[in-house]
Image (cartoon, rainbow, N blue to C red; front, side):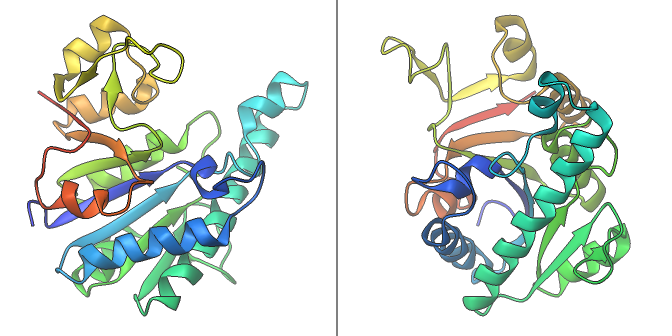
Length: 235
């Protein structure tokens, strides 16, 4: 395996599968099997999931809801998704821990950096819920922050697109894909990989990002084993 410790970032929308809302159990099972393939090879895996399939704070704010309240609702949505993924992983006999940045002691451990690292060292998949625990920060920011804290070697951003393109490939058939691109080029070209806060934090800490299609079976294994899948962003 190319990487020993990774952080996998999944969007909440990815869990919907073909649905318009909520969680698709079949999609969850597929993701659990993909993760099992790499944990069986000794890769230490941490996961951050968004909550957009249930509630997005920014969307609520655009409709007149208080932004802080909306973001707190979004944080709770990420914990719901974390519980769902935890259940799917445990169905595959993968030891798992869910840690939350907001205290929900009955369903998740509080986030403690040293404890999270110890779980990883023991072969447990650690799911980080609750975002950063603060409003106005996205789960992209949470993913980069947690990845740095646990010493992950790379952030793997699983999406429904197979990399970074010059423009949206779902809208522009002439869009061309990058195999490798620097942080500077992403910023200069105005490409959307992560929100600016998360992306800048990753750049400052020299933490590479790989954007790839998580919905194609076997892609996660290929990325972790070093195959040229998706687009790699580095210095």
